[in-house]
Length: 206
Image (cartoon, rainbow, N blue to C red):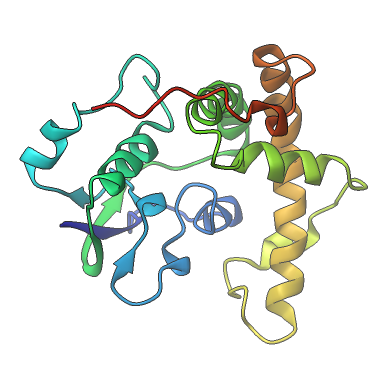
């Protein structure tokens, strides 16, 4: 059994619309957790506790394949395969003192693409999460993203305004990140979409 705590932006940090957007499925997605049961997909090492013996049992982090990005997802999945139950406790919160900018995330996307390519190659049973979202957004007409300025005041479920503002922001930010990611993905797998990876992965080992 492990415990996932909550992470929020540090109180002294000015939270921007981008940072609010990152909380909904890009950097973390606590809002998707229902009750106390979290998924291995929520294995965020910024605030998670597991027995040391469980981590040793799977051989720890795979620093060769995942030196940066997807390393916590990989550990969470391998622990899940060994039967780990991950419980979510929002009261076990921590603050993250790390302001985020769009330029930083654009640069980050090239490294994320390489990590996700290794992930779907190793685990072809799972979708290419970022690739699929960004490719779909890139295929749509350019978005102005005017609704993103409302994210600081309205949640995605706020009547009328919320869904429109968050939908506008989602498409805008995804389109801003897509070129760097998709260019890097193309260098990793020229002409090979994720659907052709079936059977390319190796077995999960400890």
